[in-house]
Image 1 (cartoon, rainbow, N blue to C red):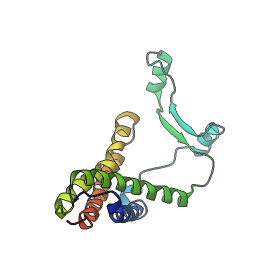
Image 2: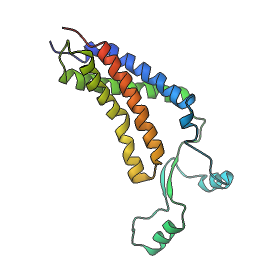
Image 3: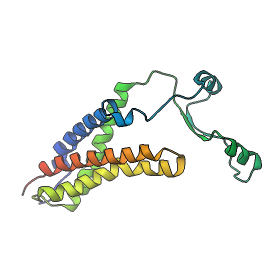
Image 4: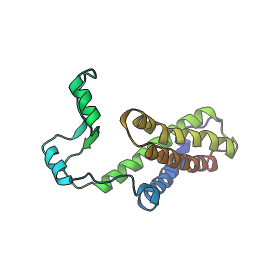
Length: 183
């Protein structure tokens, strides 16, 4: 018997709820993310210098000719980095929480698709857990690795994300294994 994505609506939603709760705990309670960000020295001067810049991503120093001696000197002197600016506004936590949950639902749908195409109804718990959990782990984690390779995101942050994604994947795999349709 084939397993349809529609028949997996409960594991999709339940795994999204569990991952949403786990993510909230990771970012609000667990101590390992408390040092992820810090302020810049002389914040008011930095804010003044950036005032009027449109929301977007900025590379400092900016230049496209990596052979330009002036640009290379700026890189040597520093600082270098990527600045991400948002619309002026107080962060909208309810909106972010809803969008985060929708992201977890989409990952659940992808997990359901891959798992339902590789495993038949009645597959034992551990095999479903392996496929669903690994798929979820990949979906939650591997996209952040290039940010450390190419854009200078601290590797410590990436390693934390990959580990947290492993936990999310284990829970997702557990939910799919538990609720996998029988024969």
